[in-house]
Amino acid sequence: MLPRTLVRFRRPLIVIAHLLLIPLAYRLAFTLRFDWRMPEDIRPLYWATLPYLMGGRLLAFALFGLFQGWWRHVGMRDLIDLVQAVTLSSALLLVALFFGGELEGFPRSLLALDWITAILVFGGLRFAVRAFREERFIPWKTRHGKRTLIIGAGISGERLVRESQRDGGAEVYPLALLDDDPAKRGMRLHGLPVLGTTDEISEVAAKLEAELLVIAIPSATRDEMRRIVDACLGTGIEFKIVPSMRELIQGNARVTELRSVQIEDLLGRETVEFAMEGPLTGMQGRTVLVTGGAGSIGSELARQIARFSPSRLIVLDQAESPLYFVNLELAEANPGLPVVPVVADVTDAARIERVFEQYRPDYVFHAAAYKHVPLMEGNPVEAVRNNVLGTLSVAQSAARFGAKRFVLISTDKAVYPSSVMGATKRVAEEIVLGWPALRESKTDFRAVRFGNVLGSDGSVIPLFKKQLAAGLPLTVTHPEVTRYFMTIPEAVQLVLQAAALPEAERRICMLEMGEPVRIVDLAENLIRLSGLEPYRDVPIKFTGLRPGEKLHEELMSEREGAVPTAIEKILIVQTTEPDVDALTRGLDKLGAAAALGSQEDCISGLCQLVPECVSPLRERGQERAALR
Image (cartoon, one colour):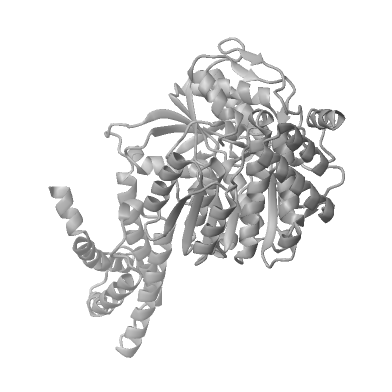
């Protein structure tokens, strides 16, 4: 009960402490001025001027909130406030002495000495309390947390050391740091030595008998991160990583909330992060519709959009159960936001029209699509109905009911498509950029093209994780197959930035994707992160390319070019204008083929609409043409 009582009366106790310390610090200034002996004739001056100092100093301390601080967490901001308060109170003392007639005969050096002693006494007291409360400075207190070697002595490493020393229940008990900056070697950070570089992880960890390694280098390149992770794996010691800068800035995590290294941390390029206030602020007070809102991309879009207070968020999907849970999550996280779950099929034009007529969305994000390449090879009619005719249905309703902006979520598989899925997404791009009724409307249509999304429903990573959990070999189609990868947050940020870029109107946006990643490298890294050895503990089985798959994907065709935008890492794809007459005729035939359920005619129609399609899709279209 005593600690709670002290906390309850903390502010009165702080005021009392200052009432006692102000005259003591002032007396110390007099003592220093007169060589540790205060002459008898000076004592009256001390007592006569003390009330002026007390009044001014208490007032200044109150104005700068020095009675409200939490001394165990005192920092540089508190020290600055203290200096300002002492300076103000010294100035008030000088004014009071002048108008009180006490300035004559008052030693001027006393003002400087009082200023110095006050800062030393009051600042020293605060930092002494912090030092005492921090576990490292209490020798008899039991240590908590695992013996930890921190890899990285930069901003994140410093924050981790500081927070772990301050938090008695922290997971880590830091022992030392490593850093590749030669200037930092031999330095001390919050009392901890920087012992070497990341090349010495194994030796230093063994010497310190470390129980945990923490990677605290958010700026590390992917090659550097792989090297560090390999070194950590080689020690056999548990290792973790600090949250990303994005998570720290958004307040989603504290620096001491460590996590396991994830496959996303080992991508073949740097993760791109954008400032989101600009694009999302434009949706504030607007009605926003997300189709495919129960999927991995659609649901993350809804989460991000909800943070910026649209007037209403409509989440549309035909998958009832996933939509139910996404709606629950959004409603709980955003209690003041009207979230409207709509169960609907985008291919049902009449139903989509009623949704638009009822809610009149200002922004439409069209993420509803079938995206599994092999599955759509066997179901081309459904791929056409959903990805082509569904896109046309939603886009036409957006134009008819005056939506401000329509953003299509596309894919790199639309470039030289070898699959039914890729071809349907290329046709969808041509619809939103070239369909006559849409071009003539006031709605701003645009598309966003990106590569594979790690962690999405169509990604290879969930499959690998399931196979690992079941003790099965990891299946890779081909040793040399590559893909461009991005994370779900990257994909969503790209979509939202593209929704705001003025130069993206009626254009295709894409992210600079860096170098493609070999799928087999992903599989090997995932196995290593699980504490196992590829090919020895977990086999990797090569199964051959699946129907419709390419060995390598491309981001643009030869007839397209990339133009930089005002936002670094986002490009505009310059492509040829669609042939409106050919597009109209082709869609009429494609719609008729889908209505008849003719798989062959759907494939043939796709090949006619996308003449740049490649093998094996091209051969399937040629076979149908030959039969005719």
